[in-house]
Structures are given as C-alpha cells and as structure tokens.
Image (cartoon, rainbow, N blue to C red):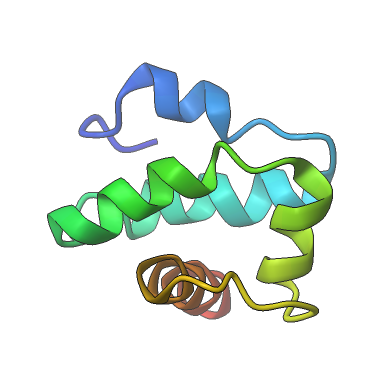
Length: 82
C-alpha cells in the first residue's frame, strides 16, 4: 500500500463487500497519490457514502450527480481495469 495514503483512508476503504474493498483499496494504492487535489478530496467525500449507493455508482448503476465525484468514480474504474 502506498505510503502517501493516510492510514485513515486505508481504514475507510474497508467496506462490506470484497468488490468494494478491492476497487477502493486499489485506487488508493495505485491512483490516489498521483491524483490532483480535487480528485483526492472527491475520493474522501465518496468514502462517506453508504455502501449500497457507492456500489451502485462504481458499478455504473447510477450517477453521482456531482461532476467531481463522477471524475473520481471514473478514476477508480480506470485503476481497476489497469
């Protein structure tokens, strides 16, 4: 895990399902540190969402309704695919 990621964020990436854990922790490990400050802030806001809503957004079942959150959702998906 990236040493640049705060311990608090690592803890918040631990969710109720393996799929969410893998997506969020993967982004934290491989994409968070190189993201611009706005994307980092959006990621932290996204981690406040309840698991069902977060999962629906990450799996493309709903939109976040917020361009900054949509951007970080796309970054998380890109990280998972790469």
